[in-house]
Image (cartoon, rainbow over all chains, first blue to last red; front, side, top):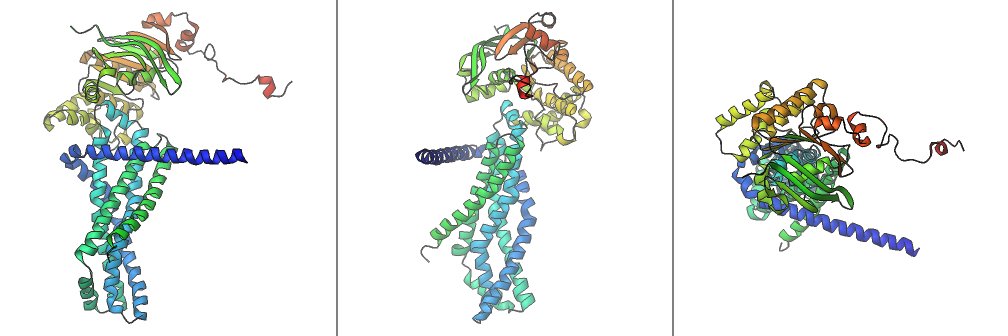
Length: 264
Length: 266
């Protein structure tokens, strides 16, 4: 009995040390990426190329998801507000839900599963096929040439994708609320315009998506860079990217929301 | 005056964790020569290339490249030295997101300020040398194994390196591609006035093109000499390797209990 307890405690200790070591390694990786960002930002065409792969190619899933989420919000919001005779406030409900919460969070979750997993798989395969080693042997630092441009591409793309998600969601809410159900168009837009505050709501949403962009891209790139150079290793790293990113996004969302709306 | 040897490996010992890979290795690679390091898988051949390239550091001993002790160089020093090295990886390690042209142009764009018109001419010259000028638009996924290896070779010599390292250049190639790569190794070495190290276990192809051979087993050099000396070497380990004998000092059977016991004959 005592032996089994010792083994369990040792196991917990081993996992804790391993997790702390990995966090330290990931932090060092982020530090190196930031340290090499100057050179990469001077060659901005590298970042633009990655923005295309991470951002532009994620547009379809972001826009379609935004439209459906907005349409569902339109139905649900109307159903709830109608009970209190406040269906004219549908525009406020749709816009605030999207700009404050759903836009940044859902687009970050979609970004993690679409672009984050692709980044991890790409970097992991580059490692497995010795492309990163080849770069090192050519006296080109892979962190500066491969990692930093992808990092900044992710950080720049994320707020733009979140903004497009929210805009599409508002349009979806309009389609259902105004066009389909018949809520008054004037009150839908005017109440939205009056209630949505640029600093309190829009800016906070942008800050959230910017933070999510840093977190998701960092996790995706680190998992790829640290992946064992085997098929199993790369597939495991890709899975970890999606799972870890999703949990981190939700955790960060709670912290940021608590911080941003603490005085409200 | 530059030393006669481009590379000198002096009493080098190296291991991964507690597992020793190289034990007191002594090696000299003269300038202008093509030298092969042979041995079975896991004998430490690739580790020597990694030590010469400064990817790994010797635990004991010295690795001298072009008069510089690799262990005493900082990161910038190693990178400066690597710009004078080219390396061909086992399966080419081409950048899969770049075309053949861009793969060969990669180092020229990273390390020089040459205008794009000059880079274009240089890339075509390198690709012409390996017979693939016409394939400059293709992506790595559209190339055969032999073609990928030739593109990687063009990329490795893009900056006219003083040292070219080949890590298992013949693995998985058909006989025609194998002959093409063998010829290119020799011709490029002569055309560039470079020095080459070929790590391989493809005996017959290699003995026909190199000037000198080191034979490595379990981290120790067990034989060295010219190709003719290696063919006539009486050491059983070398004979088994050179003539591809199935059984010998390197046993065919993985260590196991007595055969009869597994078959329950006793």
